[in-house]
Length: 233
Image (cartoon, rainbow, N blue to C red):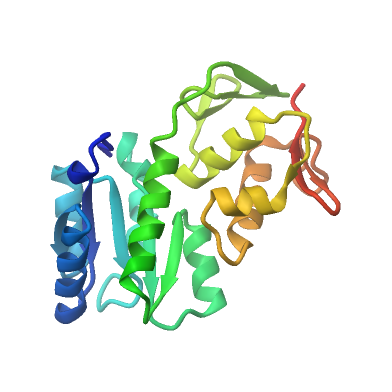
């Protein structure tokens, strides 16, 4: 991932098997100021991802052969910075189960087809702003786990624990307000999650990574009627 300060240098990879939609996305995103590379399927996308740096991936779910979910799973399992590349999923049906599956796999946001191109641009810009947010310094401890706020990295007994980009941003947002309940609406807005389900999914995933007993959380607590609170040692 190679996010830069100049919006004209933000490089996007668009993956869609529909020639017409792929070309329309390329044209519209280019007019919005992005550098755009397109791929007609997952195989071509993998080749690009292994040789070029991208700031964000716009990925159709329903494709012949390897679908968008499998490509997202593959991406999140890559070593190094590649695994943290933000992913915007496009789904033709907009089904709740499909959206949830994409978010669970580590996608940063989703948009159901048909969509307004302007909304896609706004969501992409929101994701890129979150990725480029200046880091804070310091560490927080949760039993055997510690979180480096500056790097957005989680460790358990000094061994790294992989976080998706969305998980790292949520954990950092809660860490910056440690021991204070953060309004769920604020977390939803910061994550660009219109439906609000992504925050709940990410909290569940984070609890599995930092809590001794995820079913009875000690550190990442639910505050009824408000939202969530991170309570480090």
